[in-house]
Every structure is written in C-alpha cells, then in structure tokens.
Length: 607
Image (cartoon, rainbow, N blue to C red; front, side, top):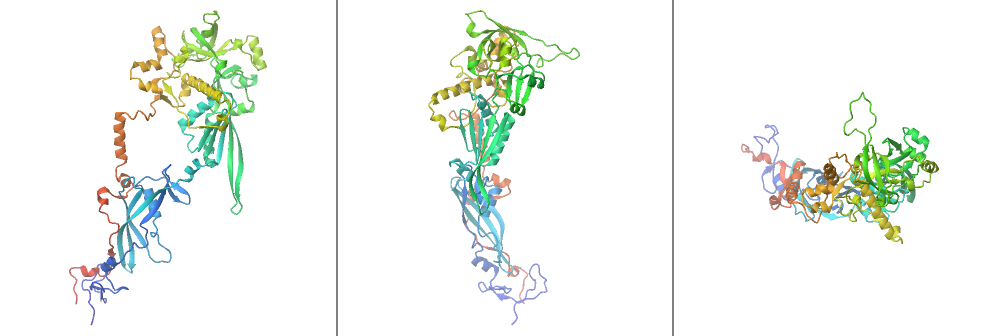
C-alpha cells in the first residue's frame, strides 16, 4: 500500500515532488521519515535544548572600586544594565559556546535584563536560543540565568590595605627650614588630581613620600612635578625576586625628586655674570613666584626675569635672606608718591592696567612708633597697593648682615637700600588681632597624609607641630596677598562666612580695604585682596543640602535610577518589575523549521 502523497506540497518545495511519509510515533500525523520518527511538535515537547547550559553563575565585584572581574586578574568597570556588563555575563555562561567536535551548535537569539531587587546581589538575564535537534528540525527556547554577585577585592584595592605592596616610590624633598613650598605643591596636586592612583602619602619635615602601585603612575606624577616646580631627579631600583624559568624579575623603583631651595619672597644677590645674562637686571632681586622656572623681580625698578631650572642647577644660588617670619619686619605706610616712568611720546597713553606700579613709600617700623621718629623712603614694586595707614612686611637691611661677601660689602658701603618691601598685609593680620586666623573668610583643602613614624616618636614632636602651624599661617598670608597664586588653587568659603547671613557684612569682611579707600576719596588700585567671587562653596556634610539642591538631587537620582533606561540606550531589551513576576524560569521549546508542518495547510489533501 502506498503512503500518503502531498498534493499542495510544502512551502519552499516543488508541488509535483512526491515522497513517502510515515506516521509520528506519538501523535500519529504523517511526516517525512527521520531518525526518531517523531514530528517537530512532539520533539519540542519532549526535548530540552537548554541542557548543558548553566542557569546559575557567580560574578565577582570589588566593593571598593565597583569593578567586575573578567579573567586572569583583569577587572573592568561596567554600569548596571549596560552592554559591557551583558557581554561579561554571557561570557561566564557555560554551554553557550560551541564545543569543537560535538557537532551541536547553539545560536543565541536574544538576551534581556530582568528587574531584580537593588540589594539582592543578583542579576537576571532572559536568554533565547535556537538549536538543531535533528537534521532540518530547529527548536527555540527561552530561559532565565541568575548571576550571583560576590564581593572580592581587586588587585589595586588589595595593594592599598597591604604593607609593602608598592612598586614605585617618589620621594619629594626640599632642603629648607620651612614647608611653605610643599603647602603650595599640595594645593596644585589637589586641583589637578595628580595624586590619583597613589596608594598612600607620608609626610616628613623636609618633604613627602608618594607610594604608587606601578612604575607608570609614578612617572606621570613626576612629569606633573616637573611642570610646576624646578626639580632634579635621581632614580634607583631594588631587586625583590627573580623567576629564572620565565626570566622575569620583580623590582621596586625609588625616585628622588629634589625641589630647588629657592622660595617665594626670598632675597637674592645674583652673580654679576648671571645678572647680565638675565637682561642686565639688578643684582639684588626678589623671588616673585616659583613654577617650572624661577620668576625674579627687581623690587626698585619692577624689571622681571626668569631663571630656568637647568641654569639654576648648573650654578646653584643661595638666598641672602630666607623668607621667614623671624627675618621680616612690619612697617606702617605713612605716605605714597607715584612714580611715572618716561614713555614714548609717539605711542598713545597707557591704560590704567598698563601704567607703572612703582611708588615711593614713606615707611616707619611698627616697633618704632612712639619711640623715635625714624622714617624710610624707598621705591617698591607693590607700591600701587599701598595707601596711608596700611601695614606691610619687608626686610630691614640696616640690621642685617649678609653671609655673601659681595652683598655685605655693598650693604656696608650704603649702596643697597635700607628697606625691601615684600607684600601688604590684609584683614586681622594687619591690625594685629590674636584671632585673625579664625576670622579668615576662606580656607584650603588638605591632602590625606600620614605622619612619618620618625616624626611621631621624636622628642620635639610638639615643637614640630608648632613650626608646622606657623608655616601654614605664613603660607595663608602669602596666598591672601597674591592673586596669581590663588588662580592656581581652589579656595573655599569658611564656616564663619557660611554661618553669616547674606548681607553686606560679608562683603565688608572681604573688601574692607576698598571701602576705606573710597572714604578717603582715593582710587583703589588694590587687586590682590581676596574677593568673594573667588571662593567656592565646598561640601559640608553636617548641614545637609539646601532645599532647592535637595529637590534637584532627588530629581537627578530619579532620572539616573529609572528602570531600563541604560538598557534602552544600549539597545538591550528589559523586563520591568511587573512583568518580571510572570516570567518563568524556563519556557517550552518551539519548533522553528521542522518536518510535518506542511500538513497544517488548509488545502492539503491525501490521495
């Protein structure tokens, strides 16, 4: 007896082709013969193509840096619901990759995130795969894979909590008796974020040590130092261990970075040859500022020059007077006479910003008031800032003896001036208030450093702490009187200014000198004082956010934590909270390309 023949024929075949059919051993419908003699629907109901694919996987995340472990000690940063995290999850599912020689291929059709509780330490992914069960029979099935998140420290975070884990050490040293240069360097590091990647920072009296996990990060930090201060460097390395089989050696690198001993406001007496090379500048100069070069200024003519780091280290110069509080004297300004330099008549008149800043000042020592009538008349490069009644600090050369023989000979002969004015004093410091530091309306951030054990156990630890406080106060006075220096760092509003109501009183605290000048009817040329617009708000955890900021933060959080937003941006399907409750762990297989489907055609007839 002949078997049934197809009249209409299946889709994609010729209508005239005749073939022999057999009955399905389960449901009895006629199908083309196959190895199991079973139709696709019965194969789908009795087959599980997800067999061999893991449905529960463990992922490791670093609690400190929130990175995910990939493979072989590699850690990557991924956002939740992102494409990168999906690739990481699929890479850890065993059974998805085709095994060579097995002949079975699993095709991934779709992958979608499923909503989970934020603190459940679980990630769920809905996978849809296809697999060929028999020749010509392809089944499709969806199932859920659960990823369990475990905490594990990455290599970098382990190094932060383990002693002796550093690979590169940068020792920054300056052979001076104060720490003002390091306080300035600390502010530059904070503003530019140069300390990122540093394991720990240790401070000493003459410098700081920076520990890094690898040589590359230390090299980037050294490059930053070379761009902000004049330095010279020495490098050494120490062998820790060697693997003879793989010819791999483990070294620890130590870099000694020495900063030039010149500091801001130091008084120098230059050699005659160097003064001629610097534009024939006067031999008696002040250090105006320190960057990757040394900025010099003649305090009596205003002429400036720059001394490169290479030129300094080729022939080092020692200051004749170091900018220390004990070497400075306080002076009262009794009068000011502007000095107008000769200008080229063919040029148009100079603007207010371009006019000469030189002025002849009449000064008197603060200690001499009421004792004698001794006065000094000297030129000054900061004379434009002064007015009658102001207080400034400077060097009194009449009571100073230089170590340099040439400088001492010039001073003894009366060639050098009697007073060198350094800067103007502001606020409570000028009036001599004991609590002037507490009334300062601005503050600076500090690095999180560890004090060296040698300094903690020293007998003079108390004296060292007092010296550090004095150096910090001297540095704050320098910042207060130098606008260019403040532009290189971040200043924040102090707690005193935040507690005050937003009235004109706060402006008077910052710019009281300008009001005094307006009362006298004089033009106020002082542009070096701290202005209120220079100060940043900073973060105060105790007070909490402002109401408006809190509303904006809540709106931002709601926007950032919207479910499925990141997945939608990356083109990944997302199963929301309500739909996730109805998702089954595993769906039944569905035939995609199979035998026997031609008998579902309505115009099919048996003959």
